[in-house]
Amino acid sequence: MQGGDPEHLLAERRRLLKKKGYDSSLPKRMYSFFCGFEGSEAPSFSKFARSIGVTLRELEGYRKHKQFDLAYQECSEIRRDYLIDRALIKRYDASFVKFLLSDAETDSTDTDIEVTVRVIE
Image 1 (spheres, rainbow, N blue to C red):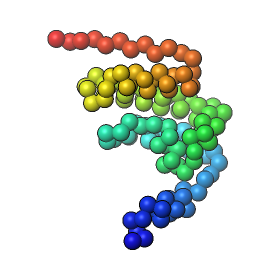
Image 2: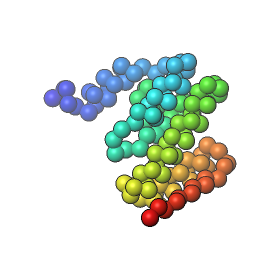
Image 3: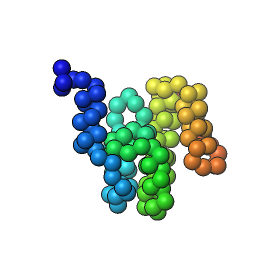
Image 4: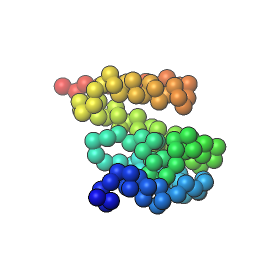
């Protein structure tokens, strides 16, 4: 059962996604990944990193490139909005979203998160 073997699939993926250095198309690819994210899972930087065949640490190292850093910040905001929207419609637990957002903020910046919820009756 070579075709469905997880180890075989992982090896094939690694072969196809050989690790590369920084590429100037990455900011646009990352932005497209976050904007076009569908499904029940939230978009994340680790998922994007895996999709291009690099580690999260390597991806974060690309932030030294100005265009990539700008895209990273924008994608961080897209991810935040995605999580908040899912919490508001009760698809995700609000406490867990708050935890995820506070963890993301402490890892990348020292800014506070301000969330305003307006209830319309």
